[in-house]
Length: 481
Image (cartoon, rainbow, N blue to C red):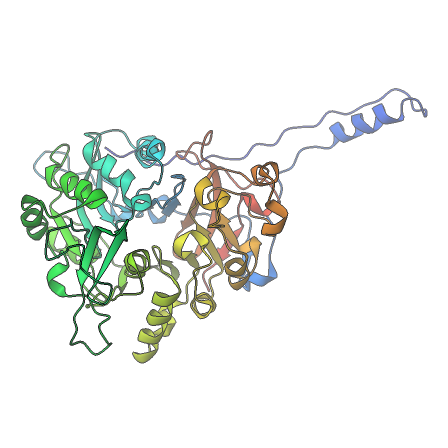
């Protein structure tokens, strides 16, 4: 059974006072004593005018109204957990005599991570929050790059955590020789990956008769349901990490079977519709999950990486007046397409949110108009050493500036402070920036705040109060209006 989050109160330490004599020789000692005499008081996080919102240090939340959104440190990759408020809890076993609504509704988005040694980080985090066996009601795979699904695959292969429903973008990775993919397949025919003049994997052939000059992927290559996944798995069609994902989904039995493997499309059925079908009493009256991407017909946005990233499952969360946008690994081409698509339907205001999950770990592969249009008060990005220390240069200075400056962008791997990449060429200078943390967003639909929790020594069961004035520890409570 999932445990309740315990909240920690701050403490004040009384200073000490007193000194005996004063002369030049003892002056440094006296100064030190005077410093110790000053009572310790908790620092107040800065009140930033650039937020253009009312900010307060204290805000009381009724426990049943508290929503928590964790951006989990999973190394290089994404791993996010949304814990719905207690008022959404349900009775996990309606057949027994206990009718208490004790089961928290959780939505996990991806699970990291690029490096094998980090594949357990999402599992470890969940087992800090809850006692095993843990049930995750809903999991979203934004796309099946390894740094987003390897940790989720690990979870599916373990007995300590189970997942009920999985939502995905429909794209798969096919083996050479399957579904017409061969070394002679060209880039004008299909999205595929070539290495040493040999086909590594194929995604989908293109529709030559569409209205976008062959940019739409053929529907027959997309996976819509668990049944379709099973059929193609039985035919040994999948390759690489997608083969591992399919195997884990189909073979998961303990502690629970994956009941739903559902493709996501704009304005399509999603979490609320699934809960309605289950009819277990989850109250989503003031919570909405709105799918805005990918489109009904998946598109080509360039090569393999651009296309798989550009079709990332993207949705907007609304809780009361609080809003947040989850974006996967969108890139410049797909962000521009998304903007144009929303503008065409007079829906561009959907992007304007309180908090933005920064696409693609803050990569420079971004479309400025998208970030300006979103105009979030705060933004959060998941990243690890690979993205920061290599030529990827996560996060991008340009993206940080588009989002309003470093004091408004939080990262799981580095201090959120101003810097230029030219100043970080030396390894020791980069290492000074490291600060592994989970990012916690708390809200009751009226106010919200960000708190950093140390990923190595912090306790997610007892998230700290924001005790420091430096911006990397968190924010005050910010009004949603």
